Length: 206
Image (cartoon, rainbow, N blue to C red; front, side):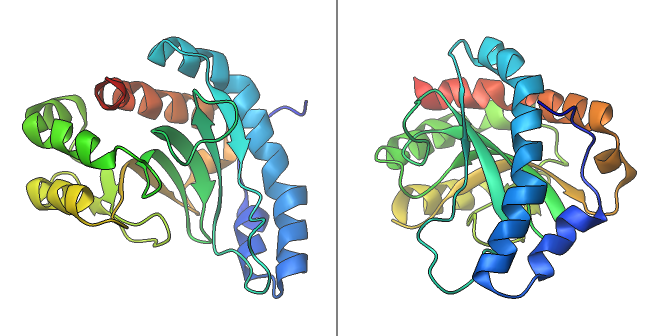
């Protein structure tokens, strides 16, 4: 297992490679080994935080036949076989930022129950999570809004009531941020983020 050395400009440039096969080759050669290296560093700590063994899942983009992916990610879930139907943690990249999420995506069978739990205890989210953490309502899109400015009630109601709506909470790091090139610092940052989000993960698993 290679030592994790952080992410560099060339990793983000992969998303500018034309063509599905060529871009997938770039993702497989440059980015996926780094996801494996991150997992080797953080998985035991994350498992300890949440009180469950967590398994790494690396996005394979297997359904894509023509259009190359605009982002790629790794997911950590208590289920060995799959992650999309469960609350899970993510580390991934678009061409302009790295994202670190606690993710609840539309495949969750009980997402309305989780949304209702969060709606009834919004204070726990606000108390546990710093206001500069960001929230996304669609994992396919780059944009996210800070917890300090978003209408949390509306976001959670939409997550509950709209079939395709999602709720992701965590942090973005811009591609040119020096922390990305320092493997040790970035590992600490990812672990700190996951630890901060663990109370919400536990709420969602109740």
